[in-house]
Length: 506
Ligand SMILES: *[C@@H]1O[C@H](CO)[C@@H](O)[C@H](O)[C@H]1NC(C)=O
Ligand SMILES: *[C@@H]1O[C@H](CO)[C@@H](O)[C@H](O)[C@H]1NC(C)=O
Ligand SMILES: *[C@@H]1O[C@H](CO)[C@@H](O)[C@H](O)[C@H]1NC(C)=O
Ligand SMILES: *[C@@H]1O[C@H](CO)[C@@H](O)[C@H](O)[C@H]1NC(C)=O
Ligand SMILES: *[C@@H]1O[C@H](CO)[C@@H](O)[C@H](O)[C@H]1NC(C)=O
Ligand SMILES: *[C@@H]1O[C@H](CO)[C@@H](O)[C@H](O)[C@H]1NC(C)=O
Ligand SMILES: *[C@@H]1O[C@H](CO)[C@@H](O)[C@H](O)[C@H]1NC(C)=O
Image (cartoon, rainbow, N blue to C red; front, side, top):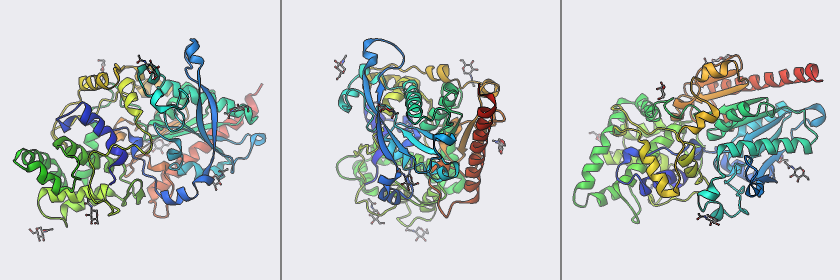
């Protein structure tokens, strides 16, 4: 049963707050769906990929109350196999950890491992506070997550300050003060990488921010943009596929309202006996469409369950040429099988499964405080029922869950976002924004070049941070090209840095 991680957000919002209407489902943040390819290969060598270290980190960087001086153990992973060393000022590549276990992200960022030999780079992956093993309050997750007065220390600004502190201290320890640091990240980690470059230009010379929807705040991006892209992905496969999906919601609702209808639906979709409701079924289907769109990679990928290459195409194939029966539910079941049961090992689908193997649960707090990304709205054309993003729903559910009041304007106040072209053109430099246009999150990404050195690399066929994944023999030319461009740009930053180091040092 492979509903796993991806279902977490939906079950959270569906069960706790958005009860009846699936139209209000909010996609969970992207990183949860990173699908490590070659996972088994990586896992078998996992212990040789990096060494694990801990740093004594300060709880609160931003005030000097006695409580702020509490500390916690922050985990980071390090690999010095390819490093040219401090004496040659060889570069340091740092991954700015996302909302989950840092090992999971490290094992998925093949790009850094594969390019390290070329750059003679030291690799460092820093874990985001409150995730994985980097839990404040003595490492006790139940304490750290107990209420607003403990969770209050979980924020992007604290995380960025953590990264600045770790990098600075590590460089000091390695006598590597002059080694250039390049930061990398995908998804929320990509947002952090971009923001880190803007806020800490003295600590990093540049950022590769992959699939980082930094424009998904306030009214900068339409709340419908995510679902518009999901719709476009499926519709581009076939008009029939689009129509079947679009027409299915009424049929599900109608069926559920008939006597015995819910049980019949349960059987049609092979849902386990323990639990079913209309909204959970609809959420389960929506999850499959969302995450398949995000991970519409050109090669097979493997996470909790394996996915074939181009899974959106496979889903539409299951709808257009059904092998499981000709009625709508049979077609949807076939499509859902692509996402939930490609391995063919599921015996039934567990809608009550809210397990969180990669420890992503803290995102819910972040999404209730500063990460207010208006999305999940649907226009008439959407494969999901027409609906509107409703900020009040978020407020209600956050109040209920955490007694927290969102600050929807904080991110743009702290990091900007409005008129980004004009603002960053003469201020920022050395950021690569990669986006794949099949990725629904690309709607909130930076898709245009801002300046000579703040560059948008856009891949029409790309999905969610596909560039950072381990390469495979089957990778298409466009993907190889993207990575080549990224390598060339990073090499230029480093070369410029060495020039400045030679000529501008006092
Ligand atoms: C660094 O990563 C490579 C794989 O790219 C691995 O072969 C090597 O053992 C790792 N080194 C350390 C110190 O973990
Ligand atoms: C919040 O949780 C902490 C740690 O469990 C506890 O000490 C504190 O009393 C709680 N505060 C409130 C207001 O419940
Ligand atoms: C630097 O060295 C000190 C002393 O050994 C150690 O406590 C600290 O954790 C090190 N910093 C990092 C980032 O590992
Ligand atoms: C966003 O809202 C602000 C303030 O209400 C308004 O000035 C601005 O024009 C809006 N921008 C867009 C893109 O709708
Ligand atoms: C679906 O219907 C078509 C023609 O109406 C038929 O040829 C096909 O065998 C049916 N498929 C299944 C799986 O029942
Ligand atoms: C998963 O796939 C296998 C092989 O196709 C199939 O036998 C099984 O019934 C499927 N499981 C579910 C829950 O649909
Ligand atoms: C941005 O500029 C680079 C050249 O520096 C170019 O290769 C790329 O296609 C441009 N991106 C967009 C989105 O136009």
